[in-house]
Length: 73
Image (cartoon, rainbow, N blue to C red):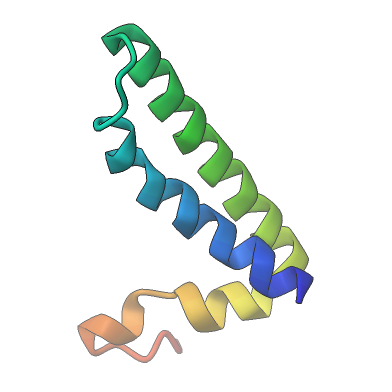
């Protein structure tokens, strides 16, 4: 459950960034809040990569199969 939560949390942070534009706050604070969301998303993504381990990250986040290469050799 922890692994799933840590993996989904960055997605929720990135999804919240467009919602910041709809808030009625000064533009400077919107930029700061959006930057904080990006930093939080990247941080939780790195933590999830550490929790999941190298093989899980390679299996689920490797873009090479999308381009028709097997990643072997």
